Length: 351
Image (cartoon, rainbow, N blue to C red; front, side, top):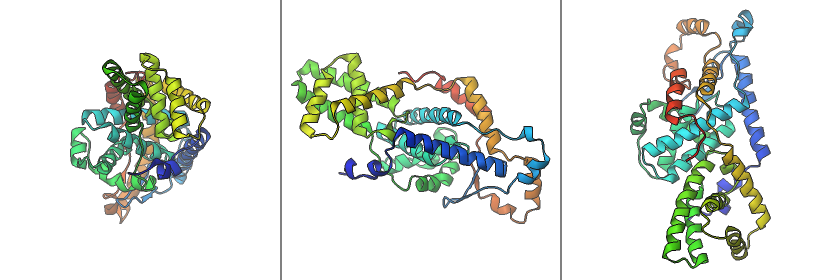
């Protein structure tokens, strides 16, 4: 069995909060620079994962109305959009009745992808579907791209066209560790710790189910990029136990630390749990008007800055036929967000 301590997950994909902030800012700034230089942030993707920008729109922009130029998304607006589609990953996986491992793996891939890219460069809807598809493959839950696309009424080719790009962005690090198995392991350990009777076993089962729901919340925060899965599992078990009062959780923590000779002190763990609590409490999906506004901004960023002139040039180009085989990551926006927001209810993520 693979070991988290020696994994690429631990070595390459656990960050500090400041490191995450810097990565999000860097991706956002790169997209802004692309928008200024090319008049669009939309990348053209080939099946081998390579990508290219369209011809610079700088000359046409200089002759046009500067006020009509697209306005880029802020870092905060990108966060709203990322969280919206993280929630949609959970909705889609639930509709297909995928196990939690697939859902969590897809979310992890999605989060890692957007450490490398801005949502202005690659539309999150396309990335979301590709991450779900890859999670199914790595977890050996065989669902074809056609079946996945058909199930949610999307063109499956967008999944296949972006598969290699996502794999490359992940550095082909596809083995991920999630809190769900750790939750089950800790529950089993708690049975021994409590010398559980039949009634207590039932209470621990309730604790497990509530902790899983809390883990679902934690998975759409930055917590999986900040903490190892074992700490995430303990954090959500603590949240669930605060509600159900099944056991003395601090005494259980001390028991774990004494048995495992952990490098962390109990105060360090509680501090980490408090950060995770704060991240969960701050989860909020954008409301309908906010999502529609951000959608329009994203669409304008991914459109060509001077679309009419661009089309005329393409008609004259001898290489127009090649462009038909390339994928542009610009799904429809306004109607899509209005419909999807309604499905997601646009409310705080409380279950």
